[in-house]
Image (cartoon, rainbow, N blue to C red; front, side, top):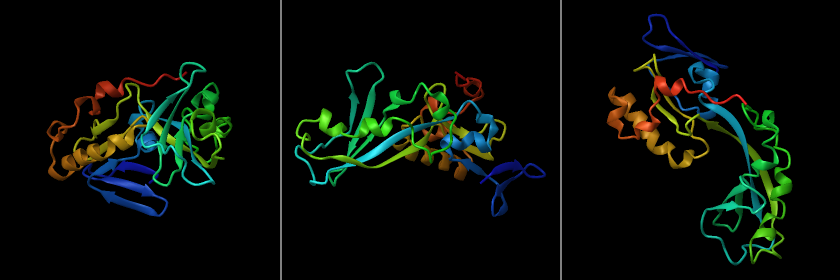
Length: 226
């Protein structure tokens, strides 16, 4: 999808794609950080920003003690020096964060859609991380075997925008701006939007938190530009 525009008569939308155009009576923008690129109403309201994560594995196999929970790690080197860690059933570890390594170079990650370029300094931080901070991993030879960036969607109030797009009620819907916490929210929010679409009902009937509802007032609150 490259663009969405109102069709003649206003009863449907034309969706432009590299393979041609098609019409739809209802459109759901389930596009998170990319929403403003096809729905300009959300410019500076759902803002893309890059994060980084890696997968760490041990060539010696699963390490004891095996980590069994998801963690936030706060390092004693200063405020804001925080990672998140998710152990995998195979003994591997997924770690994300290292933001303090690149956050001062704002153009590299803020309002940046390019997930093909790694953020500087992140891999250096992740290399040897398990050996440095976790007892029992000192001789694991754990190493980063894959590292990547991902594009997340930030909003001024840190809450997603869910519901009918203002000015296109009953035709356009949005499900975006999850501020890096989408896995915990998207499935329930999507179920609510599906109910609205299928039954022509309003946001209030979904049972979703009112703080998630996309409104004119929330759209007027823009992300800081610096």
